[in-house]
Image (cartoon, rainbow, N blue to C red; front, top):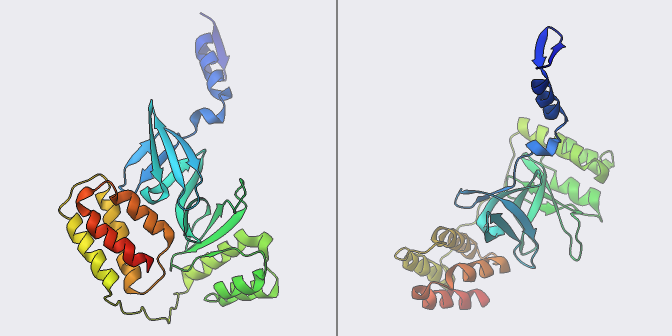
Length: 266
């Protein structure tokens, strides 16, 4: 046995070799594996692939020999190659956007149409007011968007903070909002009961007596539809696609589903 003196510590050759191997191991050896947190709060760990679609992005996870495909509506978080992705609604689509900064105002990256790189930037605010970072009229549009924090808004409007300082803008804005209570003078419109709202409610009641895999997701989606219909908001296409995907296999609710779909098309 060979003994090596390391300071005041005696190490055998085998122990020294093990120590050196640990030191030179690549950092990626200790990297956290990919995983998905589903809308049901389940955590799936395995090999993840992000897939881009026209209306709703998808993610494939391989666990052993089993592959599973999930839509962006079925996930809360995707962790892939040491980056986080979140499902974000934008332009009547649901995209899995890469999370760049988080806070009261968060920043995400996404693929612009006909591109493969994440060059688009999207601002996601906790009060529900979201927007794509504009290329044209950046100062005007962004200063208006940030006007509930006068100091930051004025800096953008004056050109002191531009698009290259986008992350600094977020930092200063989030600091501002942490010390200033947001003021929202717009009253929430009273919901109205329409033929569509009634049809959605009937479909939800029918689903309560049926058991199927995506029941919770379908009911959550229908609740979102009911709220939008009650406020006379435009119903985005991705919600229609998601509703059909969840309920087409459920034979006992096809009559109610068809009624809702027909009313949504009007």
